[in-house]
Image (cartoon, rainbow, N blue to C red; front, side, top):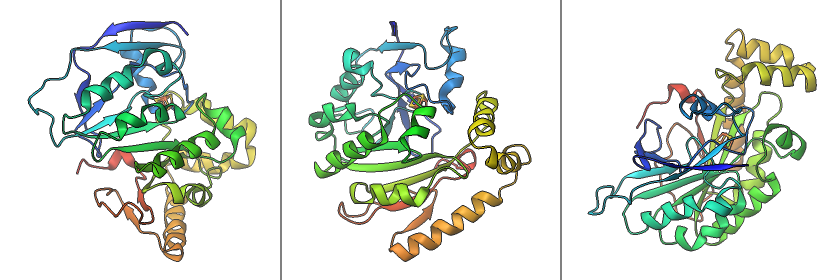
Length: 287
Ligand code: SF4
């Protein structure tokens, strides 16, 4: 892919996300090209004609203000791009940002679908309170490959384990949960020894990708069409309510805490992961 270099006014943007004060995206566009990407609306502002997933701009920016301006703030790295997409191996913009954040007093959260993040372990270990999240919504590599061009689930889980073994707090972000396809508890089982938090987010089909995803379901999972129609055409929430109840029962049986919209509690590093339900994320208010 041809990567264009662009100058950004600032690398940190004030954020409305419930989990941070600022977001930082070292790239515009994302070559992981997830079919359900909520960030694909960014194309409108990018000046690109290519489809989402087929362009990447690498940002340059002025060095961050010194003097502790951001001390104590939460910075979320990768809200509208994956900071460790393939191009990062060459362009190293995420690494440059982490270098600037070391010593700034910010608390950094990184979200990715790539094991390239392991390259920056040396910097992550210099960022107090840092957290690295890995997104996944299946253990089936076939479905994964139908949905994105990122690293295999096996590599994401292995990277999560390696970071966790190195003392980095990790999050397993089960998102987006596809009704009838994503096996939430199986993913938690696969990740629970290597993560401190599990976030759950349901599939939201409000973007331009709605027709594509519903077309995929009709073609590959025709038995699920009535369920998707009920949820995404008629607004029926009973699937999510039932899933919420099932996970609550399962978590209680497993001795895991299950909470809603709150990841602020810090447990000891070796404590079992806390499961946080972010269903209806569009309704979650900033804490
Ligand atoms: S990795 Fe994230 S930002 Fe990139 S295409 Fe997938 S969902 Fe969008």
